[in-house]
Length: 440
Image 1 (cartoon, rainbow, N blue to C red):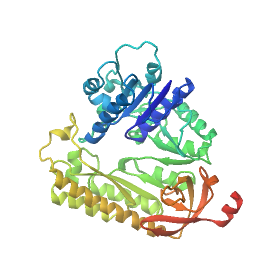
Image 2: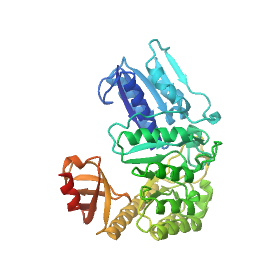
Image 3: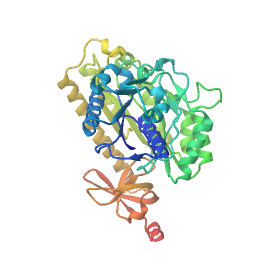
Image 4: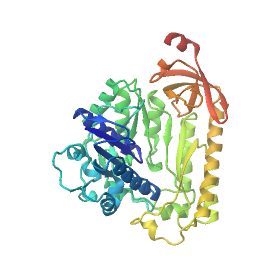
């Protein structure tokens, strides 16, 4: 059987798709590109924005065009949001797999005589345990992802995720250690800890573990494996976390801390549980403890009712803090969320102007961060050759995307690099001579 899998959205989805790939390969199937003809198509969808939903629908139609006789299975967050729309697109037969039934996806796909309509859904809000999806290998990736947690209890007013992923649920410690050991034995040099709200890890279990004890355990147990945290809420950045990053060389000095808005009134209407003064103290504390660390932030532009003054407050707060980069998103109305019913939705051109200004600020922040670290030494996990420059490319501990000359056999290795130039906004480096000679 030829199987094609495509994935939209977050690192959690990417981890889950890696599990599908592993299981299909174990069953003797052949994985093929999504653009080619396959017997089975898997679309792991996203619903965090209206655009993601549109892309999900487009991919379903593309699979049907690639092979009208193929079995098409649709899973992920868009399935939770609008299953009826997916059935309309697919017609008959149709197979929908909800987020809490992803562990059944491969067996369902390989059934000999499947009924015309398969809906493995249920109420995600009733979910009690995390869906167990072991991964045998992370094909095509230099770093692995490990999903330790799923779901969210925060219910930020703009966010559909609590409705598509259910309540916060954690993976038991034994399974985390077993999965990490698999990645380590396969030679992965870095593992990204991911989830929907990783800071809540362990609170639903009876194991006594928290995100902080788990990170310490992983750093101790796998001292040569680089550990990177995907994202953590401002209220979960504390002295314990910073002490761990300072203590362990294999805990990467890179924290992604969502802000969403730099105005207190907007934060309150977003149902974010902190103030701008609190956020400022968090960022300053991180920078004081880890002056070379990368600090990333998520920003949502054009939230309903946001005034010009409030948008300016966001811009000025970010510009005044030692933030390394931004991920900027325009607000996207999601039916069923509290924000969808708020008055004062921002016109498209105004929203776009605010988002574009923030993205220009992102460029300035990255440039300032790179210039501050210019001339430093770092250890780079080499991922690939850059198609345009032909140079090796990879990320430093503090998430600087460095390019440098070197032999192909360095790919998948961690090598010492001198960060010596910035060319057209691209960080450039050179291999330290001793390492190059050793590899030769």
